Length: 66
Image 1 (tube, rainbow, N blue to C red):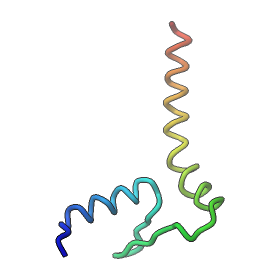
Image 2: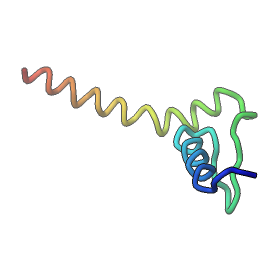
Image 3: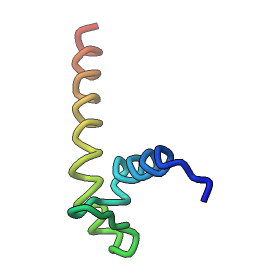
Image 4: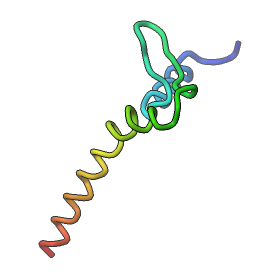
């Protein structure tokens, strides 16, 4: 079809990184039909917010030292 397998794998990986797609056994599923509250609570709150809050805490400590 003119599409390289490496491009498909890269795009699937990107979708998984932003928690739009999830891997179940040997296949993938798109979470788009779930409601927004569940997507936020299960995907974004758990995986995206903690690293951001940790960086903010580190930066604020550094600013307090200055």
